Length: 99
Image 1 (tube, rainbow, N blue to C red):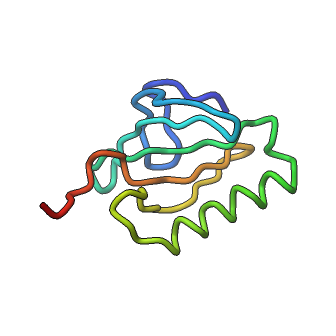
Image 2: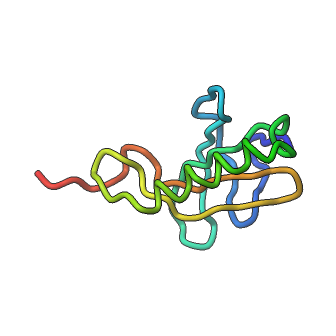
Image 3: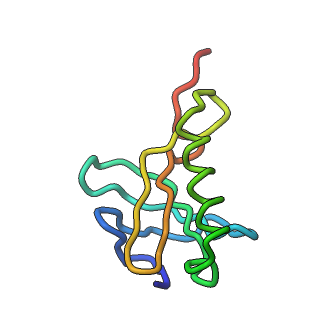
């Protein structure tokens, strides 16, 4: 499922592309339920049926969920819609850090 500004993934409205790499694309999105901006990492569709890639994506989410560090984005959840697999993350740069 190609994501473009204005499209939706569950309760998230896609605002724009933040970046991309070998394991997917990262989009800025708006959580319409909680009224906050989030980052959504999407596994490329080419890997949607690759059991190894899906397992790695799941492990990445589990590792992020186990960590709590000011320099690592917190994970809010996992979304799936058809062949689209996504990790919903705290939007980088919006975390309040102690001074």
